[in-house]
Image (tube, rainbow, N blue to C red):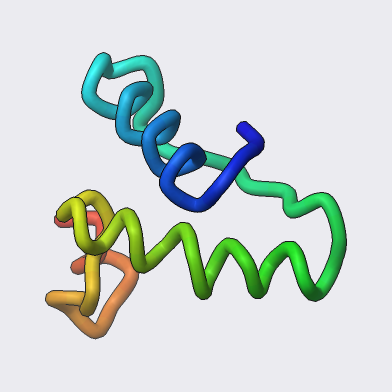
Length: 67
């Protein structure tokens, strides 16, 4: 996906809501700036939409995976 933070979030939201994806492997086009853009622009947009957690409920991997 390419575009503005909102456009990338739109694409991710669409795939998620249509059950076309249950997770994403993200590879920014450049490092470190591409990763910074993802973390500073896309993640907050997904958080505003309620699609990305703001905090973890557990302190263990087992708990994060609800096992």
